[in-house]
Image (cartoon, rainbow over all chains, first blue to last red; front, side, top):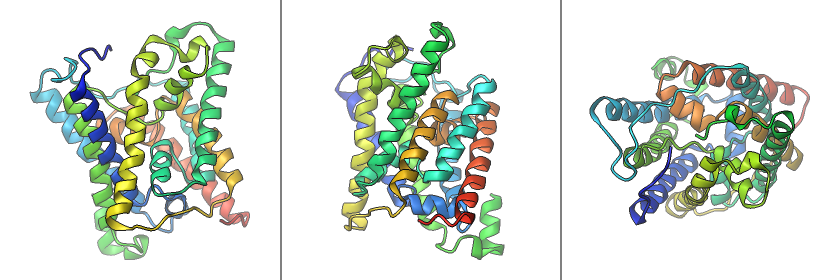
Length: 154
Length: 164
């Protein structure tokens, strides 16, 4: 999982990908909590199309790269799909995240993009996310010093 | 594609049309695809929270080698997401948007988003876009749960008369 071989091209790649994603999040309206809450209250199902279009685009890329590609040019990593192991945490985490998303109308990526559209109020949400991530890590560290079962990066 | 069929049969479900949603979603997928093709990295958005804590916390939990290794590019990635949204504003809608959703909802919801995405190994991007795009059963289960829960909570909050 090392990201060896980083250089200016890797930096450009990350910046380019981030710019595209941030643009898309803003364009789709997802960076506005009101739009997300409208969706979650079933007033406007547009966000299903955002997730659909994004996952089809990414999915076709993953499929093509794993089928026809070999290794990524900038890191030498093998192309893989995103398949995490299923356990109770996936279910518990999904529900807890769902409560938070339903209460606030923000998720991490959309929260970052929201800063870019001038929404300074979203900093409440981002602060909360850091607090939550810290609390979860702290609690986890208390429960076990075994890092082998830790959350994989994604 | 059922969604598109619904557009034809139930336009009231899409009062603002579908174009901006499809185009925006495509760009989100494109950003993920670009990074993936160049580096093989499947970039989610919530891991940034955890890896960035390693800059300020000595807790071993946040200083796992793979976190410290990826934290710099994740900061760059997140800043680029912010700038991409700035770019959208500059090109299409040069007004500042400020949400009217109350601060306590954003803060409380944010805490739960932080906890839940870390327990559940991903967020809307990691599970919802990349995991679903990988046809991962784990991710599909996670998405079904967070989507269903969020809909119930959002409807519940609205029913209690909390606006905005």
